[in-house]
Every structure is written in structure tokens, then in C-alpha cells.
Image 1: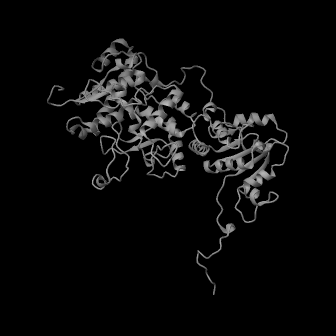
Image 2: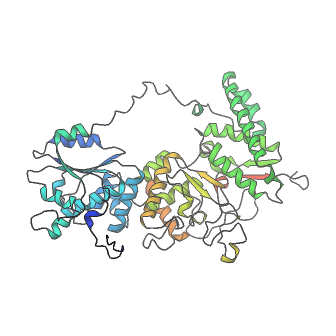
Image 3: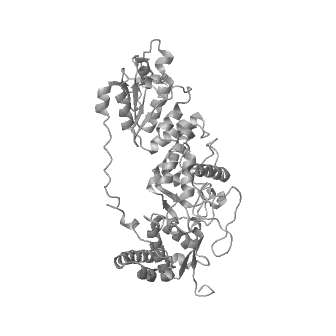
Length: 510
């Protein structure tokens, strides 16, 4: 009879345990220090491949700043980001994971210590990328390879750099420069641009100067001032937009019966203009055509959408589209802190103060940073007490509050997805889980971020990239709505000097 020992009494055998999958580390032997290989590394550098160039005069803990600089962060701001070494490694891992980096190439890796090589190997494992160490020296890299392969155990327990028996290992391959060139080919060149700037241009963005007439006279004024073929194209866009607005009103016709202000419909209209019609428009002139058609269509349904264009200056139509441009996101990618980049993205895109999104949960963010999932069960950003949780939609304590300027699933621009996904990866590295706050204190990730701290972070980041968020104030500020009325915080519509009035059968509005 075979005696079967219980699990607690069975001896632990590291060799019998299933090995953990680690990414391969390639050590490229370049004993002659060929300058052509350095030029090839510069050509290989791209969105999915980063090149780390370690500073020869760095301290033992400064490698993370070289990694962040290789990932495209501003070298001048890397050391001034107020992050600790541990937070710097978390930020580097988050940025590489969000960018889907496949290869990390380290130039002149013979200058690395064994501890630094292990840190880079762990970074490659976490980011799911291959590590390429360019050994540009005549010395033997065997001891470094053994340290990487044995996770440093050969240095701690081995006398001559040997790997201890029974230890799990990481795959390490030593290859020559010729094999490296064949294994990692150069990226495909970018497509050639057309010789003429107007060739293959976006038709939606090519509109002439439009009249500044209000929506009741906009179409008639365009008919008098524009050429016949141009007006025909404008009329098609105008009618299509009006039909889309009619469909939107039909989908929300029950919200119009809400007593008094119709707050649910206004939130839906705000999200409709920002996420579907005006925000993603190809140009400000196209957004103006859409806005005039939406205003005319809403008026036939008893809704007056007002827009004070004079308050926005001479280029008012250009401010109808989203303020989160690709240029702003490109500047934010040079930010080291994922916390600062994500907070600035939400503030600029939603034109909202941090009190509108400072209580976001990690589960309210799409994994790839493409959407925000926000509940809409209340009108104000307030917490629900525990004794109310089982009575109102069975909401648990600490649930993300409602937003007055959005509804449900809020799409984000595709060029901003990487910034949001990077901070989500950073929060997951802090073991936040799905119910943890999306924004936490930068010094203690277990504490929630305060509105004041988020405001300072956004203002400091905006000043660095040259953006003026006029809706943010360090102190309490009341901004009255358009046309008077009670004080209200700015959101997307009111930041563009727009408001909606639901006309009733009774009263002076009608």
C-alpha cells in the first residue's frame, strides 16, 4: 500500500513546481563596439520599441529615470516629478504596459550592475516585453547572464557564478550582432505623404467662412452668401444633422416630461453634443453647421438651445470641438506621473473641476482607456450613506457619485486612451482592485486624493504644457449660469456658453 502524505506534510520541491513564464532576455555580443549598431538602435526606436541609454555617471538608483527618458518622457522634467524610486518604477511599468511595448533595448549594457540588469528583466516581465542587452565590451558577460538567469541567486549563494541546483530560471540567450539584425528587423517606413497638401484632404474639415447669424437666419444667410454647390453640400449636412437630432429627442422624449427643469434631458443633451456631434467634429466650421441644425430641430420640439458666441471671442466656432487635441495628448505623454496625465485628460475633455471625477473607481474605467462608465442615479456628486444602499438601487457604500455633465458610458478620444490606461495599470500595481479609487494620494496610494491636491496637479501640469484651464480655481468660485439664475459649476456646455431651456405651455418662456 502506498502511503500518501497530506499536503501540509509533503516536502517542498522547487524543481517540481510549475515554472513561472518569463520573457526571454537577449544578450547581444558586440565586442568591437560597432557604431553601425548604435545607428540601428536609433532606427529601431518607436512606439512599440524603446531604447534605454543608461547615464554613465548615474547613481545605483537612477536607472529608472533613464528608462522613463527612453519611454519618451521629458528628460528635463523626469527628476523634477516628485516621485520616489519605487513610484518611478511603477510609472515606467504602467507607461510601457499601456503603450504595448514589445521590446526594450538597452544600449551599452556592459555598464549595468547585476542588480540593475535584474530590475530591467523584472520590468520586461511585467510589461510583457523582450529585453535586449547590447554588450559593447570585450569582457565576458557570463556572470551577468547567470545573475539574470538565476534571479540573482548565483551571486548570493554561488561561489563562482554558478546557478544553484533546483532553482527556477529565466531564459537568457547570447547572440551575435548578425543574429540580432536578422531577428529584429527595421520597422516598415511610413507611408509617403501626397505631394500636394490638398490631396486626399478631409472633406468635412474643408468649409469656407460661415456667417455669424443666429440659427433662425443661419440657413437663409448661407444661401445668399455661399456659392450654389457649396450651399447644396451644406444643406445636406444640415438636414442630416436635423434628422439625427429628431431621433435623439425621440429616444429621450420621456425625459422631457420631467417636472420643472428637465435635468435628465439636459444631461443627455450635454453628453450628446460633447461625445457624438460637436466634440468629435473635424473642424469648428463643421461643428457650427451641426450646432445651428441642432438648435433649429430642438426648437420645433419646444427646447431652446442658446449659444452666446460673443463670450468666446472672434474664433468661437473653433472652441465648439473638444479641447483635448492630439497635440495636448502628445505633450501629456511626456509627463512622468500617470496620475497628473490622467487627471489633466479628464479635466480638459470634460471641462470640469476635480470634484466632478475625484471619486472615480477603477471599475468605472475601461481597461484600454476608451470609455468612462459613470452611474447617473443622482443629480449631485454626493456619497450615499450605508443605510440607503439597500433602498436605492442597492448601491454599496463608496459607490462612484453621479455627474451632472455626463450620462452612463462616456467615450474618450482614441488618442487619449493610452494616458488613461497607463494610470489604470499604475493603480492596479498598487493593488487597488476594482473598488479602489482611480485617483489616490501620490504619497500614500491607500488614501483618496483630495480635490485640492488634484486641482494643484492639473494646474501645474497644464502650465507646463501651455494650457489655460479657466474653469479651475484654487479657491471656491461661483459662476452664474448663462442669462442669470443660480450659481452653477462649469461643465462642457456652459464652458462653451451654451444652455438649454425647456419651453412649457405656461409661463413667460412660452
